[in-house]
Length: 538
Image (cartoon, rainbow, N blue to C red; front, side, top):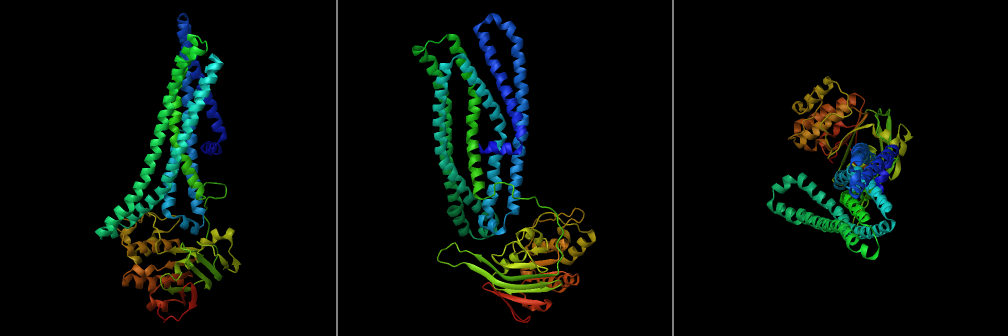
């Protein structure tokens, strides 16, 4: 039902047309059964029925192909719409909420859950066509004999009830397997990004492989196997039950209720004909089951598409003269009940156009959290942010974020210059200054990300930020992994150049010997901000 609603939301008119074509296909299929039955009952009319049979075959082919083409297009457009809305929802969701969900579960949802939905939707067209054939076939059975049709429907309902009970039982294991897959994704992510640490230490490597990855994968696969085995047994029972019904019809029914051989022949022929569409529907139910589990998983994350998300649009950075943070507070709750967590603030901070501000502080003091609040990635839990004297609220925060060009400690690099229109002269200037000429294709703007050192990664990120050229630059410990040459370039050449161009710079740094390059230096200690002398060490 949920998948059907997804299709209807995509295009109810297209869905209705496909249903009508499916109904026409079912009626044409029914005519084939009728013609075959009449030909077997009266061989003398075979000559007259031959042309009608050919026309019915052509009608079945045309209507089924048309219905499937329409439904394939509809199902794929629905899957594309779902993925687009899901990505849009993620892009528009608050950063702290996404961090709570975690990258592993997000990637698993975008990958496996959307793939499960797409797989179910892809086979939905043939299921619709088979369902119409099944309905028309049952109608023909009722035409042949109402008592036999009632008995057949009763047997079918018994088979469906037992089949659904098996699916319900399998669901218990498959739903838990889906939860376990998040842990497997987490361990695979750790393996890929921690490969250097694992290769450098065999004891750690063995412990990770046999103590983390394989146990998580084994638990998940055991549950998958249990669920799939139950589904396979249920499918076997469903198919066998059909022949049990035919056997009872042929061997038992005539003993208790008079029925002609012609009617029995028509029933047996029709039921055998309906075996393929019924098996196709039963074979699709496990995919539908997986899609339902995935759909519920997306709902749990609050990422199921709705009308609240808006597509991102290009917008110019707002005018910047001054920025003020007043009594800003942001809290992190500890996962342990006996720990109080961490609180940033209350923080008061003022920035002006063309100012260079350094923020110092030890690890865990809240520097990166402050940078995320400052740039609008986190909404302050208390206090307020004012841009040019006007408070930033939920409606204006998206526009406010366009004010900043950022380089975070664990920032991501895309393989091209996205959203940037820079001249080749500007690009060449920054490439030479940062010593990364060979890492960028000047003609295409493509970044060569293979075999980057951490220093080169940071310099490429700085290149992107400088070409983006927003009013305010925020650098989160950019110079921490640079050699002395590029540290000097950063503090003595790049920052003064940005200042001369009227840009404001906020740099999180430990390099106290360069404090003289800043207009102001502040220090964070346990989430609290204090001004310090430029000559004072961090």
